[in-house]
Length: 247
Image (cartoon, rainbow, N blue to C red; front, side, top):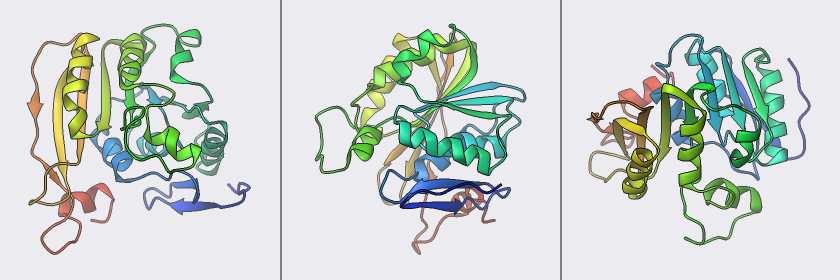
């Protein structure tokens, strides 16, 4: 279905089941972290109700609609212009029955949904603490990258409230925040169950983590084999090619 594009917008082909996404080249475009998270969460069960906290342009829900048999996914996005862009991507992909976007701060969700509403929550939250790092970006990029409107604890606390008992929580983040993440998950009874480190290549330290938690689960953490992005020749590894549907 055709949709109207605004200034500086483009349609990117996701090269997977004919899915596409609208992005603004001057805004915050999705990266590998969102693609890896959608693959990490691809085994969610059939007919589940999913919530994506901080959906941006909707990349994770769009990919999950292609990778899983989820019943419904709600994307929450604070920035009105970005949320509106995601809504047009829903129309572009004919996903109106499965994907919905709401333009809200995640801190307002308790006024919209009752506790224990969702089977699964996914999130690619801002990585940087408030007032850290060099801030020389436009407002859209600052909100996407820095904990300006909600902090890490907010994302985990809100997830705890809205997840059903034994509901699943999937997050991508930075390794330097791992201690904070695990301590906060434990605080809010979202037990860490699977952890995977993502490394640029075999020689470099991890620059991303993928973590799965289960609400009110027993303690047992499985650490999976590191995901390596590039091989010695500087090309994508076989696993990354599979994730990107290039194999």
